[in-house]
Image (cartoon, rainbow, N blue to C red):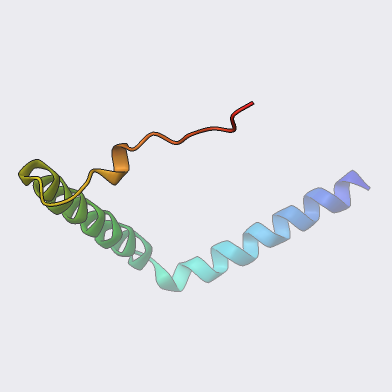
Length: 67
């Protein structure tokens, strides 16, 4: 029973890794682009907050359930 589960997991990972071979470095490039866009957004947002043009909604406290 357990052997079948582990064999199924191994087959799933082999399938995923075989799909990743043609993609190659594109996954890394996609992550680099996403991270760069996030950093640019954060820097622009920080400038707007420092100049007082917008409210700092990233620093607002979340109110929990009041008992």
